[in-house]
Structure formats: structure tokens, C-alpha cells
Length: 83
Image (cartoon, rainbow, N blue to C red; front, side, top):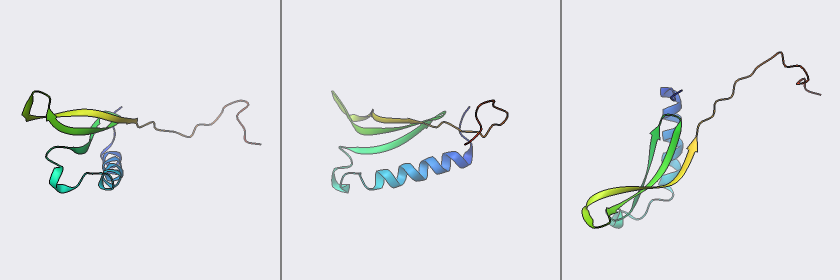
């Protein structure tokens, strides 16, 4: 199940805060930068660099991935009562 608009905004805000502390200096960002991509329930942090063999083209290399797992409260479970 894909993320809702609210969840996407939350993920992008968290990823933006995370990346803002780790991005390289502005003068080298054309050679190395980081970005967050959202695909379904996964958030992937990628490094963006010139492609090997074709420096005019940018290539993305994944470096970290997280998956959103929703948790719902449920009831009626035998043996699951808190003590």
C-alpha cells in the first residue's frame, strides 16, 4: 500500500532534515550530492554523481533504504493482554 500524502510529507521532511546536515559543500555538489527518493513504501537515500564513462550524465547510486511499516492497534488476541 503506497504512502498517503501526509506520510510522504513526513518522510520528505525527515529526509530533508537528515540530508541537510550531510550534503557536501555547494561548490562540489555538481560532482557529488545526496537525494531521497520515495517509491511505494520505501524511502531510498541516493548519491548523485556523474555517470562513469559519461560525465555529462548524472547517475544515482543507492546508499540507504528504509521501508515504512504501518502499525495498527488490534484487539481480541488471546494471551496478548498486558500484565
